[in-house]
Length: 147
Image 1 (tube, rainbow, N blue to C red):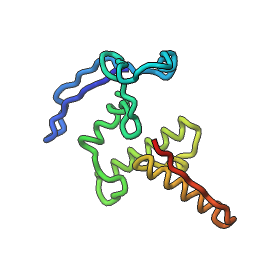
Image 2: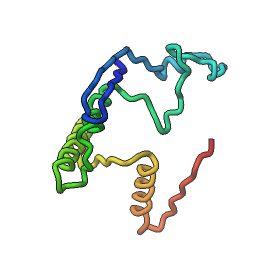
Image 3: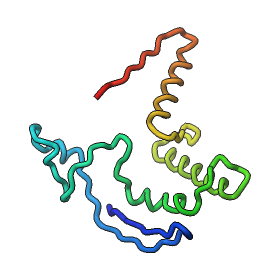
Image 4: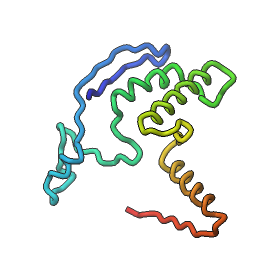
């Protein structure tokens, strides 16, 4: 895998330069093979401190960046806006992605739901369970863990 840095002219979306370098990740197996008693603050991987705060941000696979770049720079229409070409292009891209994901995991594209993040996903799941069991008068208990 490679990390590619692409410089873009924000005015006309022209690609100014693209530089790629090998990308390495600390895999779970390598992480688990390390000593159990060590100070994480002192750990370095490829000359950089380990990044373990992946709740909101994670390393972006270069293939994802390459696929998303046109939609971040040129085709940025709202996929729910069906009255103009920008919306049509974006909707087509979203539906193509939905179908690709469904094919990979053996699902129906109608079963793939895109959300804005973990909170929205959790809320949809909890509300769905609550509605499903609502008529049966079961209790749905949720809890929050504190770190």
